[in-house]
Image (cartoon, rainbow, N blue to C red; front, side):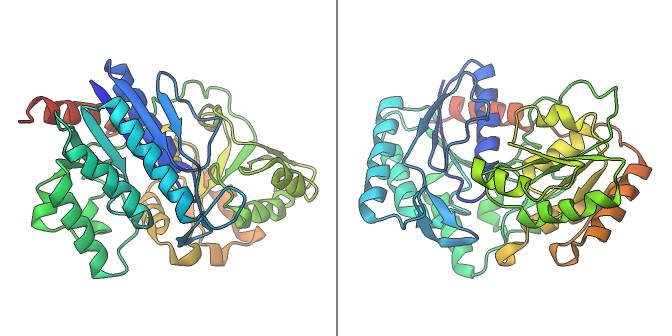
Length: 375
């Protein structure tokens, strides 16, 4: 089958990472997969076997998702948005997918609704019409207005055959972060968590604390706290994996204590977690799964800028596990971080979680089944 996945990440890079994990699962099942990305390019992500098409990239102005910026920080104009839409429709016409998946939309990315709606309308009149699915993570940003819920329900009803919820319902359900109507509930398909295959190794434990904040430009508060906490635990080596530009990393390196080093994010991150003494990170979807799969003692600092609550909800759920502690950004001090790192290390490593982690493969099964049973 031919599969097309459309994703635009505006702040962090987790949406693209999850979309590519899903894409690789379709490839493994023998499908031809095209991923269309509308966010900033991420060179270190694994796109093995996937045709990756890059639209003119857009990003948000920090947590202000009402303004779209070009890569250079200038505001995107109508000409650019029209160019993106035309390219997207051209790819659709060329690929003629059997399965079309929109990542997050229509539960988010409403600022790009003109682009997405044009895609959906064009797909709906294709012959044969592709099965159209939405792909969403375990926890969504709760809607600030009832109109957002109505918009999602109306759009799902008009265009979509189903919604892939990448969560284990025994752990978290969509209802915990998003009002689920009866009509929407009938179209939900829980897939389990979408995670890459577990990393191997981990027999030789290091004295390294891995500090990460995804591949984007967020996380400065976490990195600054790590700088200040590192001298409190001089027996540990702290490795900060800092996204963004080389200039950003260089500026931070100038401030680093002697037991702190700084590198760019790396595909080896998950392997490194297997032997790390501890992890300090935010609580995004992909990082949370990395923590679960590796069993690494973890301190979570949920991202809450601009009133964001998604990571806080996820961190609260993980805090019930052994060797996991949470520090809110407002409480993030050198002493607090050092104390939490010592505490989770003393608790030891957890068993590696395997249950409910095959969401990518189950997503493929669900999508194939919907395609095979389509009129």
